[in-house]
Length: 240
Image (cartoon, rainbow, N blue to C red; front, side, top):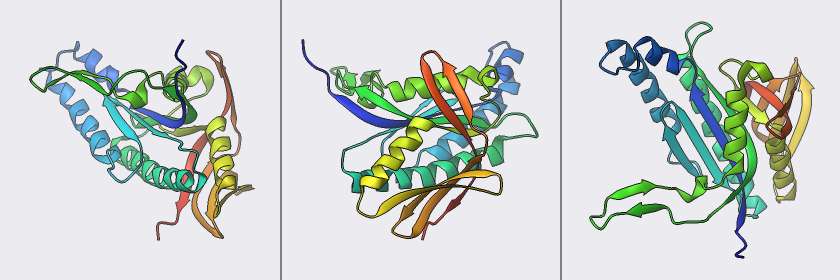
């Protein structure tokens, strides 16, 4: 039997909160003008998370966004990809919440995690006319990082995944730290300060990005996913 190629990858899954309620109130009829609110909301997601300067692939699916990128086993290149991705991603995530969140309602919630994927077919199937008949991007084929991120995000308040926040999985943070430590110029510093658990990716002596999580972590055990979640509350960036 052919051995599939296993590729390590990071993945983020985000979706808009309260998106389905608007459609339910309109009986799922897009002719109802109340649905226009969702049209405006989804445009914010498209405009802010389709960044051409970050690594990997982005797939927009209704009110959800999946972003994934591979680890290439080159620590110097991989850690640069990770830093660039995180800087653009947390900024975009914040901007969506600035536009979309109304009081305690709406906004976007997301999960960033780490896993693997298989490749088992080409990108897309095309007809003889050149039109794509089946979309099947290889980055999302049997992608366990995406599966985990999706399951965690959708498990909701029952598992303490609440509100318009970005949650980081312990496996992702461990992978980032391991890659940074293998590189020639990066490292990770972890510390507690002002009620935050801080995770700082440092280039030589310069913190490139510092993720500031709620100090109390969230134990998570659901659907065979046993991990710890960290809720992002703030961040510091060095984009010089």
